[in-house]
Image (tube, rainbow, N blue to C red; front, side, top):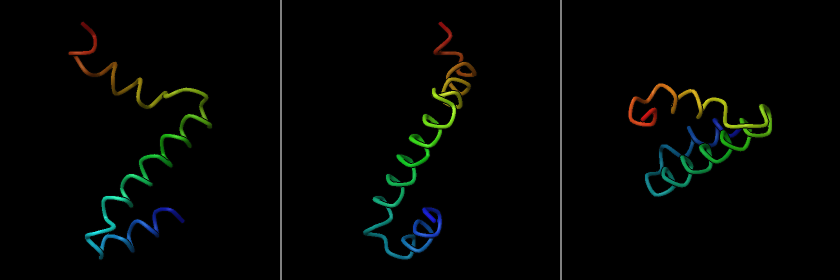
Length: 53
């Protein structure tokens, strides 16, 4: 449902940024609630050579 709202908001440039923020926040909260931790963010950080140092 959030994705549908985001796609519909793409037509309006003024609300595009707000739609992106809403989707990002929704994904972060969903991942955190489902896994209990930022597992996907940890995987991205582990793949980053700078964060390994």
